[in-house]
Length: 123
Image (cartoon, rainbow, N blue to C red; front, top):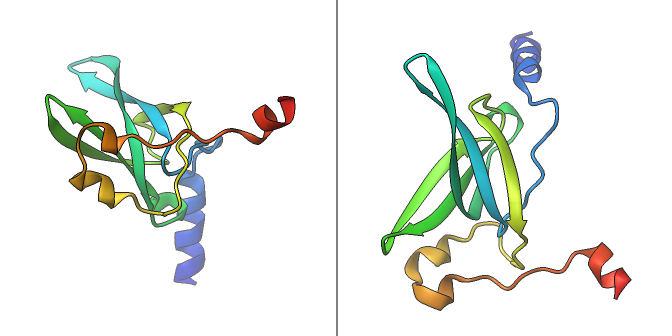
């Protein structure tokens, strides 16, 4: 009984159009910020290093370097505060979590770009 109620509540909070990105992608996360009575969009760009959980509790972590210091932010996928996620490039990865990027600096942080299947067929 309780499981059905929880499932109904979770389904009502799910995003109608799911965000399309994968681990290793370089993305721009557009987040709605409330300042007083005004709303603005703030963009956080970086590499997706992890996706956690599932259903309405699903989160993703984005990492970037600011002034030589690593900054990570975790965003809930189904939050109305996340306006959209724009994929800039697709990284070629073999792991589900890219925590090893935390120890790397400079050019070692870059990921090899993954070619899309449609782009390979066009060649």
